[in-house]
Length: 515
Image 1 (tube, rainbow, N blue to C red):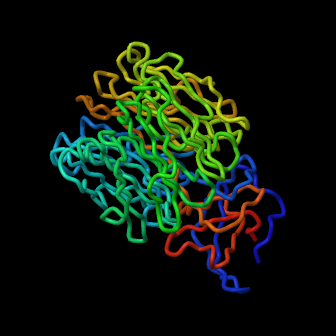
Image 2 (tube, one colour):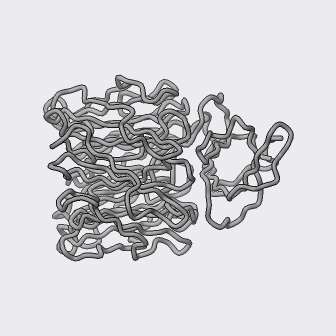
């Protein structure tokens, strides 16, 4: 029988075994060990989001770095000692040279419900700019070295399909991660974004939904990402940027998830506050920066700003709650990402890149979340370690927790260092925040203008939550299958059959349902 735990679970990662139940009869066969993450704070809404790019299921976050000059992407595995400095897997673009394979790399979430994170790699220039996105599935031995699925731009040449490629979260609540791929060049740069649904056999090969930019020549789809769950209904929501709208002022469009998938037209349209600012050049879920249980959104602007929009029961605010202005100018806002919780205080933090500052050496700025929202001045400023012309901060992201210490770590790319060989740097989180010097430096394996670090795959906002439960004033626990050796499997959880997501390999846990 499900009961309230006798004592509260401590924040952080826990490992449990799973048993089936039919009525009062509990099975005797244990599942693989499952990994649970308990947040540091209590939120009043029964919703949560977040996934770890753990491609081999060992409980440590992994990192992928793209090297567009070599048409490759490199996979580095996390461990108790931190991130490996040599790649465990090298992925090579299956198509012609110049296709820009690796220009976009991202965790796809778990598209087939087998319990392992999957990867998507974009190549927006293949087939005369038609573009493709390649999906690699995770397993106990890591990522496959050949794509399980190749998605080709549905609208032909010059569409730049794959310019953005991200997990969309679970937009229809079926328990599988879905995928969004942008093609900003379609229809004379009006742009489109395509949503592919996950299932037990993997992603659908044709888009379940095609979103067309509401404004002509707006470059809709140049950026696209899961917005997390901005209204707390248990479905992942989507944000798509269109930086070219209104003569470059820019907009971002938010589409809400539902049992039938994404709702169209967009529920919320955000317009850039600054004329000609290219608002929407970057978009991302900010996580939950104020601990209220709703996902928040960050939208970057090329005019050295980034804006935070908070979620609520009625959806996303239409006016920014916080405006971040680049302390040094220099491309601040071209790259934005949730940093995860770098100091373990229970609030999500944010990282913003500015790759043009200091003679293109670049910087990245970390802003901490709190009960009152995101700080508007950076707590930590990370300068490019390798000096001028490195373009440090061109991509930024959360690396997840690469060493399993309970704090989110950061990854920042610098594709132009060492005569375009490129590097990516890992900064570890701690109780006092992000380290100011990189813990690990990854150098491009090929010195021939590889542009290693032009893209980085990080922890993404993928929703693993089943809707239909009323809000409770208790922390939500998200279960993700963990197939590696259990560090400590000290308990069991026994769900009712209705809590099992069919064929998904995932079960969602809520307060009061442990035994």
